[in-house]
Length: 91
Image (cartoon, rainbow, N blue to C red):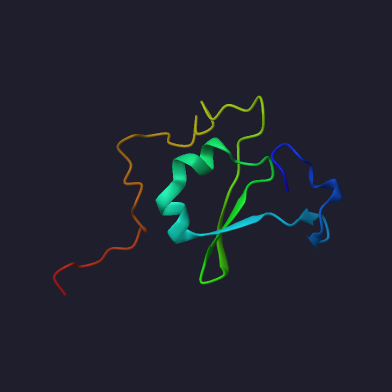
C-alpha cells in the first residue's frame, strides 16, 4: 500500500482489518526511527518468526497523551509493584 493510501481498496485479513505491513522485530531494531518517520496510518505489524507480537500505530490526530494517567496514582508513597502478598526473599 502506498503512503497516504487508505485501506478501502486493500485485501482484508479479518472482517474489518486491511492487510498491514509486516516487519520482523530484527528489522525494527535496525530502523525504528525511519519506521516512525514513515509510519502508515494503519500502522505496522511487528513479527517474530512470522508470528505477530506487536503493532506500531500512530496516535490519532488531535489526541494528546498528556494527562491520561491523571488520578491513576493517588498516593505516590504506595508500593505500585506489590502483589499484596507477604513473602520471604531469603527462602
